[in-house]
Length: 165
Image 1 (cartoon, one colour):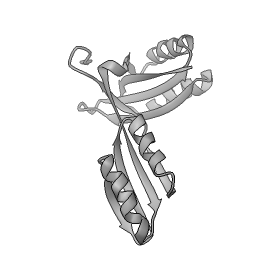
Image 2 (spheres, helix red, strand yellow):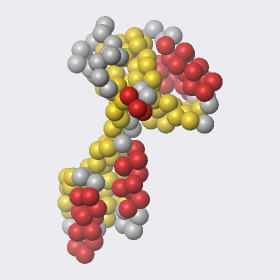
Image 3 (cartoon, helix red, strand yellow):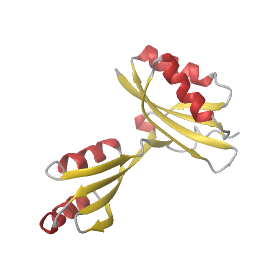
Image 4 (cartoon, helix red, strand yellow):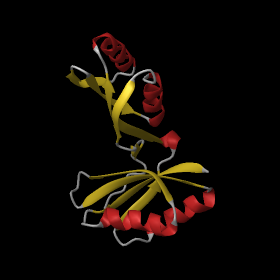
């Protein structure tokens, strides 16, 4: 099993995300993460999907998604030619003695402390999945109260593969 990152450019219409995710569930394909947002042109939405499976399944996913009416373009974002980022918000229980330790770990990862309460901190971290996983591993001695991860958003490097509609 391996992972593949697909970038879709789709019509910005109601139900488009539901139709795409429905295709995955009907066929039994696994979605590792999915993000969606409007592009610079409000008629289109960019969707980034991370899917896992063997080569045959991943090729089948690409072909099936490309057939959907709302899909204008689909391409694989290859790791060497793309930039991936994910956002994580982490709420950590801290007392006055632990607070500086969490802040120090956050500083190492260039994370931001975005909320401080008497018994917790919320840390915002942006980076690739490996960076976020490494940060979470270093927080192992602390109690993570809540965790929210956005999933991968990505773009290809350079201008060769830009899709103009």
